[in-house]
Image 1 (spheres, rainbow, N blue to C red):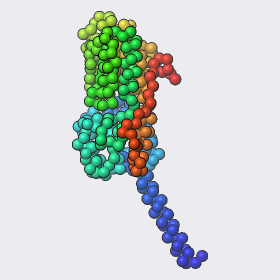
Image 2: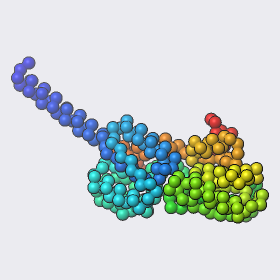
Image 3: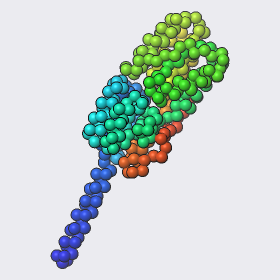
Image 4: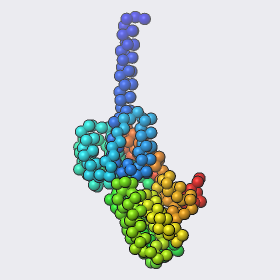
Amino acid sequence: MTATLRKRLSTAALFLSAVFAAGTAAAAGKIAVITPYLAQPGTQFYVEAFQAAAKDKAWDVNVIDTKGDVAAVISRLEDAATQKVDAVVINVDPAQVEAGLAAVKDAGIPVVGMDAGASPYLVTNVTSNGYAMAADTAAYVANRIGGKGNVVMFVFDAFPPVQVRGVIADAVFGNNPDIKVLDRVTPDVSDGGIADSRAKMEAILAANPDKGSISAVWAAWDQPALGALQAVEAAGRQDEGIVITGIDANPQAREAIAAGGNFEASMAQDFHGIGKAAADAVAQTLSGKPPKSSVIYVPTKLITADNVKD
């Protein structure tokens, strides 16, 4: 082998090494996942799924929990902009943190919603179809109580994916003239939501002591439904036929449904699917081919005693 040939081969090897290194660098990324709702089981599940998918992509993921403080998300977004992360994933109402999202946009950093809400600041929002989930559970309640009776609703209008569920449930119940929404409750979710929901349901039960005065409890997610179940059982009113439904089908909810008590139905969200789809949306965006749709829906399923063990 001549010296000239050896030099050319060496140059080619260096070039290929540089190309490979550049490709590896492009594949890696620093991702900030920001949420005030990590105390919620559903949020925990899809954040964990996102982390698992990110590990396969060799991403450095920093999960930031502001512990119920939505305003603090703005500061964390501004931090992400300063730190020049490659992408941000949020689980919060975008409308409440626009100042932080603007800072991220000015830094040229893409943002993907993971069960967040619609916003021009987001590349896309990966979520379950809240309209369909609420319609299914509200219709279940309406059918179970024969289209008449008093219903207690647990809602959370501060978070768009949950807010739309309440709107749809209102419409379903409103379409039944003999169904009355007795109370529309927004629980404190700082501790997850069960304890405060139980306390509020206990007060409603005390104010409506007669058998049959409450026909059902519709909850926009499982934690209030579980709190309401605890209140009904603690009051010794579990045999009155009060129907309770939730949304998420988290493990506690599934156990309650399987037990055959008042908690009868919930919607199973594919939390793993949401986390993975959010990671895929980030990967597409970083590769220069962001998703075309502003919303990506992951399928859901109604869970009752008939299929809870499937």
